[in-house]
Image (cartoon, rainbow over all chains, first blue to last red; front, side, top):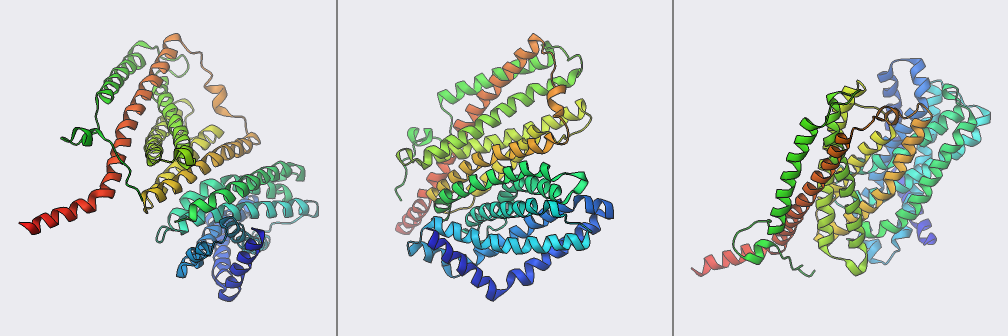
Length: 225
Length: 255
């Protein structure tokens, strides 16, 4: 299962390396969203107070696009059907696609964090770096898992991609809450301390644990047609 | 795929299409009696609340509908698990799950509507970011999504398997959302609903709430039976509709 997952992840990342859709389209989209937030909120003080939330909100919007992209390449030429016909373990496909998605998300989040530092004058602090790193890893893995799970469902049916946001956004609400609070603690936004952040990382960890098991079990029946 | 043998009152009687039976008529009558009783007790006999005055009467709707919504979603989860479990796999379970979710979404919408009207009168605002209120709204959206998944198309068993998995994932998701919203509110302010709804219930008020739950439960059972049979008929049309049309065209050719 893990060997299959590694191969699928490598395949997805190779497709991305060659097509550059994420780097040329999704990253600029995320950056423009960050600029738009500043237009909408129209206050330096407000923007820097809500910067962690905006970073995660922009991540969620971009996640929707990344997931759609991830399954668009599977549906082209019936690649998923070919994988299934070749007897590839669906759990392996699930974990592999989630791994590739996690790598792409991590790059995206890094860009968003840097843009928050540049645009919203967010300041990183040394004491919070470990918390920040752990939060980003946990949230990224969680988003990649549920994104792949519901992407497989919505992407499997052609022309029904509009369903993805409706299914995915309610499910990732705990990640938005947990990751935003933990990031606020790591950055010291609104006077939050680093110690406040760890319970939220716990929430993210529970989310990851539940959906890694649930997703591995559920993905097979969802993509089987 | 084997065509499931669908026994509906209409096919059994072979005469007039319909989903009513003696039992549904009995339940339907009981529902009407219950609703009339709810109206009498809720609007006339029960007193106005000391603090909330007449707005408390909204709760006689609110409590009944939210009860039905929870029961309906729980039944959807149960029926979905029954479908996925190999020994009880049957499209009947899938139709039960679908019918129950439809009714649940309807009653959850009514709950949110009645609740926000009551909130406007009691708290001065339609919405509070209370954990229970917020996660109820998420539950509503989740099952709207579930119904959308049911409408994706494909064969009946594809629909059944897909939606059953989504229904079980919802069981995973909803407690997690509730827990995280609770944690989120916990750090900001105390739950405002719990303290302020702590009214001293008059005996007749409690009885009206009791009638509300009974009447709405009867309504749920009645709707379930009819809706589930309508879904069975729709599946039957999908299975046999084309053959029937072909046969008719052939018969025309023979004339």
